Amino acid sequence: MINAAIVGLGWWGQNLVNAVRASGAIRFTTAHTRHPATAAAFCAETGLRWVDSLDAILTDTAIDAVVFATPHSLHADQVRRAAAAGKAVFVEKPFALSVADAHGMLHDAARAGIVLAVGFNRRFHPSMARLREAVKTGALGTIVTINAEQTALHGLALTPEAWRASPDESPAGAMTAIGVHLVDGMIDLLGRATEVQALVTRRAAPVDDTTLLTLRFESGAIGQVFCSTAATPHYRFAAYGTEGFAEILGHPMATYRLVPATTDHRRPAEPVVTDTVGFNMLTAELEAFAASIVARQPFPTPLSEILHGVEVFEAILRSAASGRPERIHQSVA
Image 1 (spheres, rainbow, N blue to C red):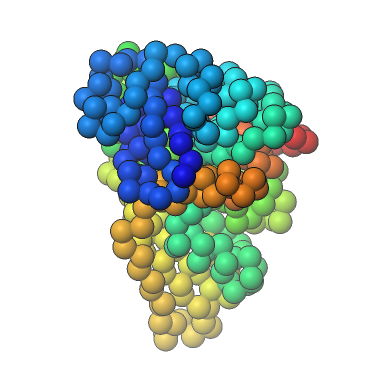
Image 2: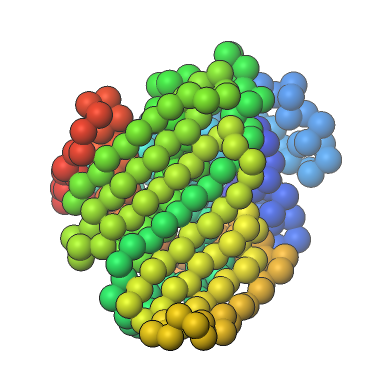
Protein backbone atom coordinates (compact mmCIF):
# COMPACT_ATOMS: atom_id res chain seq x y z
CA MET A 1 0.00 0.00 0.00
CA ILE A 2 1.36 3.39 -1.02
CA ASN A 3 0.87 6.14 1.56
CA ALA A 4 0.29 9.46 -0.15
CA ALA A 5 -0.19 13.08 0.81
CA ILE A 6 -2.50 15.44 -1.06
CA VAL A 7 -1.46 19.07 -1.49
CA GLY A 8 -4.42 21.19 -2.52
CA LEU A 9 -7.90 20.23 -1.33
CA GLY A 10 -10.17 22.20 -3.61
CA TRP A 11 -12.92 20.41 -5.49
CA TRP A 12 -10.43 18.53 -7.68
CA GLY A 13 -8.14 17.52 -4.84
CA GLN A 14 -11.16 16.13 -3.02
CA ASN A 15 -12.12 14.17 -6.15
CA LEU A 16 -8.68 12.56 -6.17
CA VAL A 17 -8.93 11.57 -2.52
CA ASN A 18 -12.43 10.14 -2.98
CA ALA A 19 -11.35 8.15 -6.04
CA VAL A 20 -9.10 5.83 -4.01
CA ARG A 21 -10.92 5.62 -0.69
CA ALA A 22 -11.63 1.95 -1.41
CA SER A 23 -8.34 1.22 -3.16
CA GLY A 24 -6.01 -1.53 -2.03
CA ALA A 25 -3.08 0.08 -3.85
CA ILE A 26 -2.88 3.67 -2.61
CA ARG A 27 -4.37 5.72 0.20
CA PHE A 28 -4.19 9.35 1.28
CA THR A 29 -3.09 9.81 4.87
CA THR A 30 -2.05 13.46 5.00
CA ALA A 31 -3.14 16.78 3.53
CA HIS A 32 -1.94 20.33 3.19
CA THR A 33 -3.93 23.20 1.73
CA ARG A 34 -3.61 26.99 1.72
CA HIS A 35 -7.05 27.39 3.32
CA PRO A 36 -7.36 24.82 6.14
CA ALA A 37 -10.75 26.07 7.35
CA THR A 38 -12.40 25.17 4.05
CA ALA A 39 -10.92 21.65 4.11
CA ALA A 40 -11.43 20.87 7.81
CA ALA A 41 -14.73 19.05 7.41
CA PHE A 42 -13.44 16.99 4.48
CA CYS A 43 -10.28 16.02 6.38
CA ALA A 44 -12.36 14.95 9.38
CA GLU A 45 -14.75 12.94 7.21
CA THR A 46 -11.98 11.13 5.30
CA GLY A 47 -9.53 10.72 8.19
CA LEU A 48 -6.84 12.92 6.64
CA ARG A 49 -4.21 14.39 8.94
CA TRP A 50 -3.79 18.07 8.05
CA VAL A 51 -0.31 19.59 8.31
CA ASP A 52 0.63 23.24 8.05
CA SER A 53 3.34 23.09 5.38
CA LEU A 54 4.70 21.16 2.42
CA ASP A 55 7.94 20.73 4.37
CA ALA A 56 6.05 18.72 7.00
CA ILE A 57 5.07 16.29 4.24
CA LEU A 58 8.47 16.14 2.60
CA THR A 59 10.25 15.29 5.85
CA ASP A 60 7.75 12.60 6.87
CA THR A 61 9.33 9.21 6.20
CA ALA A 62 5.93 7.49 6.40
CA ILE A 63 4.78 9.27 3.22
CA ASP A 64 5.80 7.57 -0.03
CA ALA A 65 4.28 9.96 -2.56
CA VAL A 66 2.90 13.47 -2.95
CA VAL A 67 -0.04 14.40 -5.17
CA PHE A 68 -0.31 18.05 -6.19
CA ALA A 69 -3.70 19.56 -7.09
CA THR A 70 -2.50 23.13 -6.77
CA PRO A 71 -2.45 26.36 -8.83
CA HIS A 72 -0.56 25.80 -12.06
CA SER A 73 2.17 28.36 -11.37
CA LEU A 74 3.19 26.48 -8.20
CA HIS A 75 3.86 23.15 -9.91
CA ALA A 76 7.48 23.76 -10.89
CA ASP A 77 8.72 24.65 -7.40
CA GLN A 78 6.60 22.01 -5.67
CA VAL A 79 7.63 19.17 -7.95
CA ARG A 80 11.31 20.04 -7.70
CA ARG A 81 11.14 20.23 -3.89
CA ALA A 82 9.35 16.89 -3.66
CA ALA A 83 11.86 15.28 -6.02
CA ALA A 84 14.74 16.58 -3.91
CA ALA A 85 13.09 14.95 -0.88
CA GLY A 86 12.93 11.61 -2.72
CA LYS A 87 9.13 11.46 -2.88
CA ALA A 88 7.28 10.01 -5.85
CA VAL A 89 5.23 12.80 -7.46
CA PHE A 90 1.85 12.96 -9.15
CA VAL A 91 1.00 16.44 -10.43
CA GLU A 92 -2.22 17.58 -12.02
CA LYS A 93 -2.27 19.01 -15.51
CA PRO A 94 -1.02 21.27 -16.90
CA PHE A 95 2.39 19.94 -15.94
CA ALA A 96 4.04 23.34 -16.42
CA LEU A 97 3.25 26.72 -17.94
CA SER A 98 6.60 27.01 -19.73
CA VAL A 99 9.09 24.71 -21.41
CA ALA A 100 11.86 26.07 -19.20
CA ASP A 101 9.96 25.01 -16.07
CA ALA A 102 9.17 21.61 -17.61
CA HIS A 103 12.84 20.96 -18.33
CA GLY A 104 13.81 21.83 -14.78
CA MET A 105 11.15 19.57 -13.29
CA LEU A 106 12.10 16.64 -15.54
CA HIS A 107 15.81 17.12 -14.81
CA ASP A 108 15.30 17.12 -11.06
CA ALA A 109 12.97 14.13 -11.15
CA ALA A 110 15.43 12.14 -13.25
CA ARG A 111 18.36 13.07 -11.00
CA ALA A 112 16.40 11.98 -7.93
CA GLY A 113 15.28 8.74 -9.59
CA ILE A 114 11.66 9.21 -8.56
CA VAL A 115 8.44 8.20 -10.31
CA LEU A 116 6.87 11.30 -11.89
CA ALA A 117 3.28 11.20 -13.13
CA VAL A 118 1.01 13.82 -14.71
CA GLY A 119 -2.77 13.68 -14.38
CA PHE A 120 -3.99 13.11 -17.92
CA ASN A 121 -6.64 10.72 -16.65
CA ARG A 122 -8.45 10.29 -19.99
CA ARG A 123 -5.56 8.19 -21.31
CA PHE A 124 -6.64 5.44 -18.90
CA HIS A 125 -10.24 5.02 -20.03
CA PRO A 126 -11.01 1.77 -21.91
CA SER A 127 -12.68 3.80 -24.67
CA MET A 128 -9.43 5.68 -25.29
CA ALA A 129 -7.53 2.38 -25.21
CA ARG A 130 -9.83 1.09 -27.97
CA LEU A 131 -9.35 4.22 -30.05
CA ARG A 132 -5.58 4.10 -29.51
CA GLU A 133 -5.47 0.49 -30.69
CA ALA A 134 -7.58 1.30 -33.75
CA VAL A 135 -5.23 4.13 -34.72
CA LYS A 136 -1.92 2.44 -33.87
CA THR A 137 -2.72 -0.90 -35.53
CA GLY A 138 -3.91 0.74 -38.74
CA ALA A 139 -7.47 -0.52 -38.35
CA LEU A 140 -8.70 2.94 -39.38
CA GLY A 141 -6.23 3.18 -42.25
CA THR A 142 -4.36 6.44 -42.75
CA ILE A 143 -5.56 8.97 -40.21
CA VAL A 144 -6.63 12.15 -41.98
CA THR A 145 -7.75 14.18 -38.99
CA ILE A 146 -8.75 14.03 -35.34
CA ASN A 147 -11.52 16.32 -34.13
CA ALA A 148 -11.87 16.87 -30.40
CA GLU A 149 -14.26 18.96 -28.37
CA GLN A 150 -14.86 19.36 -24.67
CA THR A 151 -17.09 21.90 -23.02
CA ALA A 152 -18.22 22.73 -19.49
CA LEU A 153 -19.93 25.50 -17.57
CA HIS A 154 -17.65 25.96 -14.57
CA GLY A 155 -16.15 29.14 -16.04
CA LEU A 156 -19.45 30.90 -15.39
CA ALA A 157 -19.05 30.36 -11.64
CA LEU A 158 -15.58 31.92 -11.40
CA THR A 159 -15.20 34.98 -9.22
CA PRO A 160 -12.51 37.63 -9.86
CA GLU A 161 -10.52 36.51 -6.80
CA ALA A 162 -10.47 32.82 -7.82
CA TRP A 163 -7.00 31.69 -8.84
CA ARG A 164 -8.40 30.01 -11.94
CA ALA A 165 -9.65 33.43 -13.07
CA SER A 166 -6.12 34.81 -13.27
CA PRO A 167 -4.75 35.05 -16.83
CA ASP A 168 -1.34 34.14 -15.41
CA GLU A 169 -2.71 30.85 -14.07
CA SER A 170 -5.12 30.06 -16.93
CA PRO A 171 -3.85 31.58 -20.18
CA ALA A 172 -5.38 30.95 -23.63
CA GLY A 173 -8.98 30.66 -22.54
CA ALA A 174 -10.07 27.11 -21.76
CA MET A 175 -6.67 25.54 -22.47
CA THR A 176 -5.41 24.87 -18.93
CA ALA A 177 -8.77 23.61 -17.67
CA ILE A 178 -9.83 21.49 -20.65
CA GLY A 179 -7.84 21.93 -23.85
CA VAL A 180 -4.63 20.34 -22.61
CA HIS A 181 -6.52 17.03 -22.25
CA LEU A 182 -7.53 17.12 -25.92
CA VAL A 183 -4.07 18.10 -27.13
CA ASP A 184 -2.55 15.33 -24.99
CA GLY A 185 -4.95 12.83 -26.56
CA MET A 186 -3.81 13.87 -30.02
CA ILE A 187 -0.13 13.60 -29.08
CA ASP A 188 -0.88 10.13 -27.69
CA LEU A 189 -2.47 9.01 -30.98
CA LEU A 190 -0.64 11.06 -33.64
CA GLY A 191 2.77 11.84 -32.19
CA ARG A 192 4.57 15.15 -32.49
CA ALA A 193 2.95 18.32 -33.78
CA THR A 194 4.81 20.92 -35.84
CA GLU A 195 2.46 23.91 -36.08
CA VAL A 196 -0.57 25.37 -34.34
CA GLN A 197 -3.00 28.22 -34.85
CA ALA A 198 -5.15 29.40 -31.94
CA LEU A 199 -8.17 31.62 -31.53
CA VAL A 200 -9.24 32.67 -28.03
CA THR A 201 -12.34 34.61 -27.06
CA ARG A 202 -14.52 35.59 -24.10
CA ARG A 203 -18.20 34.85 -24.57
CA ALA A 204 -19.97 34.44 -21.23
CA ALA A 205 -17.53 33.96 -18.34
CA PRO A 206 -15.60 36.71 -16.52
CA VAL A 207 -12.40 35.36 -18.17
CA ASP A 208 -11.40 34.13 -21.63
CA ASP A 209 -13.53 31.01 -21.88
CA THR A 210 -13.40 29.59 -25.41
CA THR A 211 -10.50 28.34 -27.54
CA LEU A 212 -10.24 26.91 -31.06
CA LEU A 213 -7.07 25.24 -32.33
CA THR A 214 -5.81 23.77 -35.57
CA LEU A 215 -2.70 21.60 -35.33
CA ARG A 216 -0.46 20.08 -37.98
CA PHE A 217 1.39 16.86 -37.11
CA GLU A 218 4.65 15.43 -38.46
CA SER A 219 2.67 12.65 -40.11
CA GLY A 220 0.71 15.21 -42.14
CA ALA A 221 -2.51 14.65 -40.18
CA ILE A 222 -4.49 17.65 -38.99
CA GLY A 223 -6.01 18.08 -35.54
CA GLN A 224 -8.90 20.35 -34.60
CA VAL A 225 -9.68 21.26 -30.98
CA PHE A 226 -12.64 23.18 -29.59
CA CYS A 227 -12.92 23.77 -25.86
CA SER A 228 -14.97 26.09 -23.68
CA THR A 229 -15.69 26.59 -19.99
CA ALA A 230 -18.89 28.52 -20.82
CA ALA A 231 -20.81 26.10 -23.02
CA THR A 232 -23.23 23.24 -22.36
CA PRO A 233 -21.15 20.24 -21.19
CA HIS A 234 -20.13 17.80 -23.92
CA TYR A 235 -17.18 15.60 -24.91
CA ARG A 236 -16.29 14.09 -28.26
CA PHE A 237 -12.97 12.72 -29.53
CA ALA A 238 -13.10 11.43 -33.10
CA ALA A 239 -10.55 9.98 -35.54
CA TYR A 240 -11.23 9.93 -39.29
CA GLY A 241 -9.27 7.45 -41.38
CA THR A 242 -9.27 5.98 -44.87
CA GLU A 243 -10.57 2.64 -43.57
CA GLY A 244 -12.92 3.77 -40.84
CA PHE A 245 -14.14 6.33 -38.37
CA ALA A 246 -14.15 6.03 -34.57
CA GLU A 247 -15.31 8.33 -31.81
CA ILE A 248 -15.66 8.57 -28.04
CA LEU A 249 -18.78 10.32 -26.79
CA GLY A 250 -19.82 11.94 -23.51
CA HIS A 251 -17.92 13.35 -20.53
CA PRO A 252 -17.69 9.92 -18.84
CA MET A 253 -16.25 8.62 -22.18
CA ALA A 254 -18.55 5.62 -21.80
CA THR A 255 -19.47 5.21 -25.48
CA TYR A 256 -16.98 4.09 -28.15
CA ARG A 257 -18.36 3.98 -31.69
CA LEU A 258 -16.53 2.43 -34.67
CA VAL A 259 -17.80 2.76 -38.23
CA PRO A 260 -15.90 0.85 -40.97
CA ALA A 261 -15.42 2.62 -44.29
CA THR A 262 -17.72 1.84 -47.22
CA THR A 263 -17.84 3.06 -50.79
CA ASP A 264 -21.59 2.55 -51.05
CA HIS A 265 -23.08 5.63 -49.42
CA ARG A 266 -26.58 4.22 -49.90
CA ARG A 267 -25.74 1.34 -47.56
CA PRO A 268 -23.58 2.74 -44.73
CA ALA A 269 -21.68 0.28 -42.61
CA GLU A 270 -23.27 -0.78 -39.36
CA PRO A 271 -21.53 0.95 -36.42
CA VAL A 272 -20.01 -1.18 -33.67
CA VAL A 273 -20.76 0.43 -30.31
CA THR A 274 -19.04 -0.50 -27.05
CA ASP A 275 -20.23 0.99 -23.77
CA THR A 276 -18.10 1.09 -20.63
CA VAL A 277 -20.27 2.36 -17.79
CA GLY A 278 -19.03 3.51 -14.40
CA PHE A 279 -15.29 3.44 -15.08
CA ASN A 280 -13.37 5.78 -12.75
CA MET A 281 -10.44 7.34 -14.61
CA LEU A 282 -9.05 8.95 -11.44
CA THR A 283 -8.90 5.60 -9.67
CA ALA A 284 -7.18 4.05 -12.67
CA GLU A 285 -4.48 6.71 -12.97
CA LEU A 286 -3.72 6.84 -9.24
CA GLU A 287 -3.50 3.05 -9.00
CA ALA A 288 -1.20 3.07 -12.05
CA PHE A 289 0.93 5.62 -10.19
CA ALA A 290 1.07 3.31 -7.17
CA ALA A 291 1.97 0.32 -9.35
CA SER A 292 4.82 2.30 -10.93
CA ILE A 293 6.21 3.14 -7.50
CA VAL A 294 6.06 -0.46 -6.32
CA ALA A 295 7.64 -1.78 -9.54
CA ARG A 296 10.13 1.11 -9.71
CA GLN A 297 9.09 1.66 -13.29
CA PRO A 298 8.16 4.85 -15.18
CA PHE A 299 4.54 5.95 -15.18
CA PRO A 300 2.72 4.73 -18.33
CA THR A 301 2.43 8.23 -19.87
CA PRO A 302 5.86 8.94 -21.42
CA LEU A 303 7.52 12.07 -20.06
CA SER A 304 8.72 12.90 -23.57
CA GLU A 305 5.07 13.32 -24.54
CA ILE A 306 4.41 15.41 -21.44
CA LEU A 307 7.28 17.73 -22.45
CA HIS A 308 5.98 17.95 -26.00
CA GLY A 309 2.58 18.93 -24.65
CA VAL A 310 4.20 21.91 -22.92
CA GLU A 311 5.99 22.79 -26.17
CA VAL A 312 2.62 22.81 -27.93
CA PHE A 313 1.11 24.86 -25.10
CA GLU A 314 3.79 27.54 -25.47
CA ALA A 315 3.13 27.71 -29.22
CA ILE A 316 -0.61 28.07 -28.54
CA LEU A 317 0.11 31.09 -26.33
CA ARG A 318 2.28 32.64 -29.05
CA SER A 319 -0.38 32.04 -31.70
CA ALA A 320 -3.16 33.45 -29.52
CA ALA A 321 -1.08 36.61 -29.08
CA SER A 322 0.08 36.96 -32.69
CA GLY A 323 -3.08 35.82 -34.47
CA ARG A 324 -0.93 33.70 -36.79
CA PRO A 325 0.12 30.06 -37.07
CA GLU A 326 3.19 29.34 -34.94
CA ARG A 327 5.85 26.68 -35.30
CA ILE A 328 6.23 24.36 -32.32
CA HIS A 329 9.75 24.51 -30.95
CA GLN A 330 10.92 21.02 -30.09
CA SER A 331 13.61 20.36 -27.54
CA VAL A 332 15.32 17.44 -25.83
CA ALA A 333 14.47 16.59 -22.21
